[in-house]
Image (tube, rainbow, N blue to C red; front, side, top):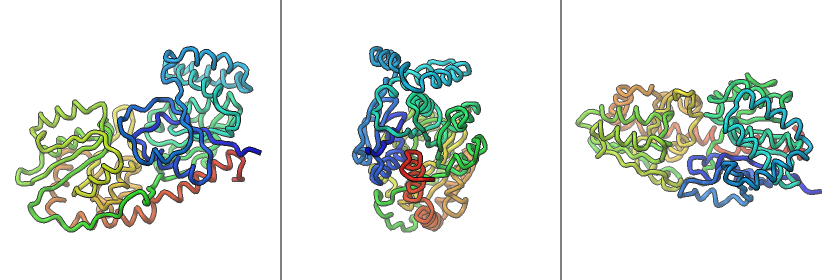
Length: 414
């Protein structure tokens, strides 16, 4: 008998900003799961991580916009009528459309029909990253094909999705997920409160596969009066808070020599560069754009302070527990961040790092105080590294996730 394979639905593949997904899928594959990857979008990044090349599973791309492949979509929609779960799936879609009559919703139904039509017969279940639109596709496919599905939720998908939709994706009465995982205690508590049973949602920290990272460099105290090298990694979007950091850097005392390096791209790129010019600090900033993980880690090894002033965006979007904080800890790079979402699950203020509000004056004071206390950085970095290696490695989460996925596929019992 053929062992059932797992179809994995992702927003896009490969994506530089989602190393946590690549790390997880490679680990699941190397643990013995046979994967089939389905991506809603084609890649847009010009670079990839070495990790992406390790994944052996086939990758299939759904029509990003239905108008792009009309014949493929038409064939699939015609064939979908003959699938065993068509009536139930169409009814679920109709209920969703009545509450969310949008082009996005219609596109997800079309993508689901294509996937359900083209998906091999040896698929035994689905697993999707992100609980908003990708999970809508996975849910419709699962109903059409009569298969179980599961999800991994992260941040934006939890906090910007309407409650009715989250509840139904967590309810067996509405063809909800067999189980879900999420990467923060903060998010798990919220989803467990919406589910029919708290046991439906597991807390699974991504953690780091430390075998992929070099040992941390020897970090001596920074000499008095030397250049303070500050860096950040993250998309240039509202929730990352880099506008507030630019304002804070402009408030640093004149006698402090500093330079800030930013890695990442995003929709606010031009606006933030202009902000730096307006604040008179553009000549003290290096914008490196998108980099692969080896370049990120190399930069972390040569800087003195990592800053991520995350905040809740106006639309409710926010970070969960950014993996980049754990990456900084892996290289014993001291961290300054904010007590938003699940960041305090990894960092206790004054112990593994510094947590402040994103007020520019307070951020500036904290950076200046850090620069004036050379012994503070190594102490914080050592504690963060101990916390990482003790509680936030990848293996425990993969073991738990693997067991739940195999149970869903009927390979083991819960």
